[in-house]
Length: 102
Image 1 (cartoon, rainbow, N blue to C red):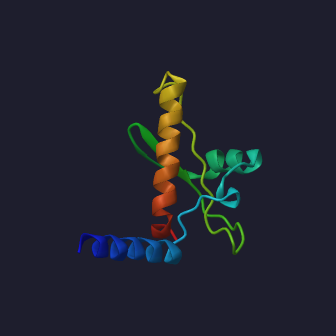
Image 2 (image 1 turned 30 degrees about the horizontal axis):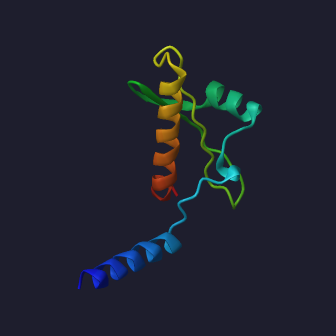
Image 3 (image 1 turned 135 degrees about the vertical axis):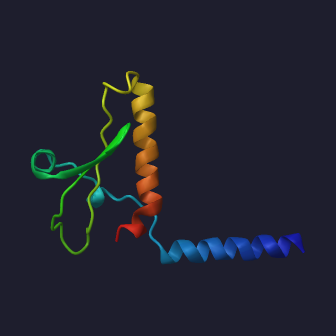
């Protein structure tokens, strides 16, 4: 009976993964220096310490509705290990919840 539950649970998870795309492809990464400069100069921001979200509406094409980049300040997180950890957590959070943005 337990084996039956595991099969159903695995099938449900696999079915969910096929419906939602939980990837973070290269096309969704914000890499262009000119776009990043434009974002920081003309974008709007929302802050809740220690995070700050800077956003701007843009047309990236039909295949890429949203582009996302992560940066962590040395001022608040002195160690590179801590900065890398928070960047990893933020990218993973975006990857798992981007369907809410679309």
